Amino acid sequence: MKIVVTGSLGNISKPLTKELVQKGHAVTVISSKAEKRKEIEALGATAAIGSLEDADFLSATFTGSDAVYCMLPPFDFFNPKLDFMAEARKLANNYAKAIQSSGVKQVVHLSSVGAHVEKGNGAIDFHFMVEHILRELPSDVAITHIRPVAFQNNLYAFTDFVKGKGFLEGFIGKILTLQHYGLISLIKGNKKGIILSNYGAKDIIPWVSPKDIASAITEELVTPFVGRKVRYIASEELTCNEVAGILGTAVEKPYLKWVMTTDKQMLSALKGMGLPLNLAQSLVDMNASMHTAKLFEDYYKNKPTLGKVKMKDFAKEFATAYNQ
Ligand SMILES: NC(=O)c1ccc[n+]([C@@H]2O[C@H](COP(=O)([O-])OP(=O)(O)OC[C@H]3O[C@@H](n4cnc5c(N)ncnc54)[C@H](OP(=O)(O)O)[C@@H]3O)[C@@H](O)[C@H]2O)c1
Image: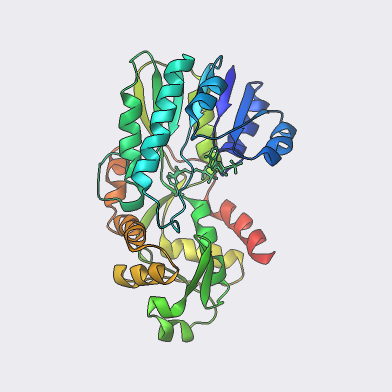
């Protein structure tokens, strides 16, 4: 089959491209950067260099394909001008236009857990809207909305905290000082490393490996279907303390704990990192919705068979990155 993959060589799209190529499909990968061409071609795929912001480019790239994988890249929460709902609406409309004008009839759309409700999940509220824009397409366009749970990869953001450096570098790309958390005394007593967020500790979180997501998307892309469906993807359900234990063991810190901050502390930390108040609030709200498990209410009603890649597998990759 001729398949177009958006998302370049990102968390999901790289293993997805590898799997599709391995199964003998002709894959075109969209990247915004010309320098990715070589790496894409090395995987046995064709590179289409252009932007998801450009509906005509998307339409030309989709034309002649049997199936397309459509995703929205993460937004820059440090951009004070960011209106992520407007940005998501624009990209979704571009996809809708390109799907219609190219005539492609099989679409796999990367959505998210939480997309069953319009509001209340903060920074990921846009997924509900995007699903609904795509559902306006004519009924002969088959669409699977993939709703993964929390990516294991999100845990890389805590690497420096686990190192006990006293601040969390890399968390959405900036430095988070302990002062902003208002948790200095706690950390002073625990210089050995800690994970902190406004969800955590005993919260049970369903986690997923992007490799398991890629396998599910492969299945959906290559299996002809009609109509519309939603598919949740998860690899394992664990409390945050269990996650801390697994990652801690992998980096020889078996005592590692995941401590919860209040929403207020988290908001103040994010503001301290330079995030605009409204965007910081949307991230706090997203985490809070994980803490209350409201984010996962529809997932629990439609639980999938769990994937193969468990936290212990991810912990090996985490330890490699940690030790580099
Ligand atoms: N993290 C979670 O727990 C979670 C859970 C559920 C759903 N999700 C959703 O998963 C999605 C992210 O997926 P992912 O992690 O696989 O993505 P990713 O690894 O962040 O990759 C996205 C890639 O898209 C490319 N890109 C960015 N802007 C572009 C543009 N304007 N035009 C063309 N390409 C562009 C970039 O590659 P180039 O630089 O090569 O262009 C980027 O590496 C988001 O929609 C998020 O909401 C995340």
